[in-house]
Amino acid sequence: MSAYRPEWSPDGTQIAFMNFPAPQGFLSTKLYVVSADGGVPHRVLPDDPDPAWNGTWSPDGRFILATNNTFNKWKLFETKTQKWIPLLENATIGGFSTWSSNSQWLYYWRKDPAGTAGIYRIRIPGGKPELVVSLKDVHTGGWWKNWTGLDATDAPLIMRDIGRHEIYALTLDRK
Image 1 (cartoon, rainbow, N blue to C red):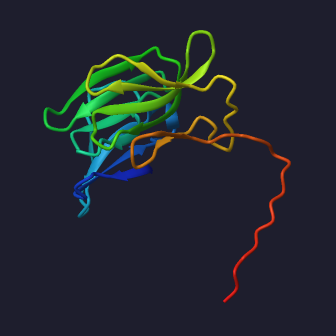
Image 2: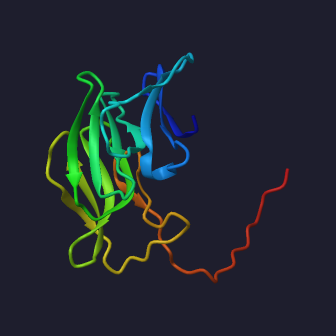
């Protein structure tokens, strides 16, 4: 078993991770959960034929978010009922998401049908996507240019590209 992108449950008792089984690799990735004390990992819903990526726990531990390998289909695994809940399908999603601190919202980067990027959010479970802020004329950058995060107040964070040719000098205090 090849574990990838492990994530601790909020209560620290479990670890969710993806498995890349050979020889299919990312085309057949599945989500697993294992006790933090060790043991045999169990596959989350073994009868589900879809690949499952990015097992991300909600802060309250109620859900694990998973996407397919093309990031256009998102679903939630409800930990109490042990069932998948469809969240987004056929969406143009940038691939990065982040939970609000109260687990009621999922924020993500995406492009609208006209191609304009923005930060969106969807109420959990089962809300409709809503635009939080347009990123029109904002040039995102960095290795993960579509990365989205939230600060301590749940305000969106992005990586902005304002140039690649600046040189900065740092003055360090010496002690």
